[in-house]
Length: 386
Image (cartoon, rainbow, N blue to C red):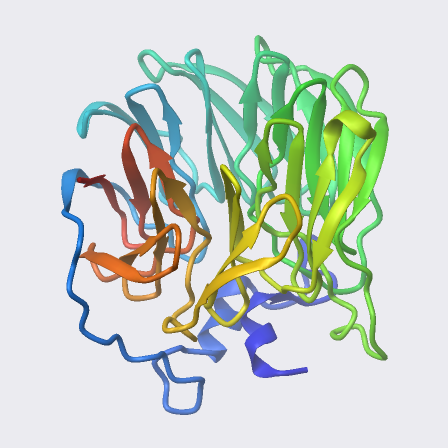
């Protein structure tokens, strides 16, 4: 197994203790080290669009964890490893609280509730309006994926591949779905997703599962990847990024697997699949599907057929984030905290924007008519594209 896999893998028994943490693994592979793959040097570009920080703020650092900001209207909820949680409105901190313990995942939010989680399996809910505590709940193991908050409750996926639906009012457990955990798997920070009558969750082994909101029963499974190979490392084929949904189409991508799209209205019928490996993520827009592969190349595929439209490969080994698309622009971040803007139609570079220099590990998000990025160093920026 090549060294590119090592920073992503969790060793056997990780979720029950007894082996190295993610930081130990990541420290062994440094993208700036002479022994590791060299990041592609950035070539000068001539910007053809104007980008600027609409606002930026400093929040706590992520440490070795991945924190996703939650966008609710013009409000952005952010969290950090040290327990700090903030509500930003147009870049201004409306409130900041401390959860009282270190966090490992967040943020899930809607207009009423803000939810984060810890490495001990604690799920903590606060009022979106003023940050006052609402309830706490306990799940079976470490939580790395941001909880999903919706009208039907709060969905939490824990590290032992249990999915729990909690009551939004008091945190009471409504149902639990459990799937077996393979010997080796990637540490997944991909949250569950609500859509129609389902909760969609990606699992080790390359399965995208639709769970019924009413009782957690699996309604259908989409085969995004099939584990192959002679060793456990070779057979790692996990979905660790958020599925993308547009209309009735849902698409997911697996590491050492495929990009696959399914029809939610036809019981999860497979529409098409392409062999592309990714742990970063994908995005849908109009006729396009955009995906960042394991080496950092950004691909544009036809979302109806999966055929290739273009490939931007000048960001190799830069640990490129999952993409976001807004209008005619696609945005990705990298390990040096740089946001790269690509033309939607041909993948050419149209602009760049620097942040604080810390890695952008979570996919870029859309917000309003621009983009939102949070770095592991604690910078969050709303970037306007004109």
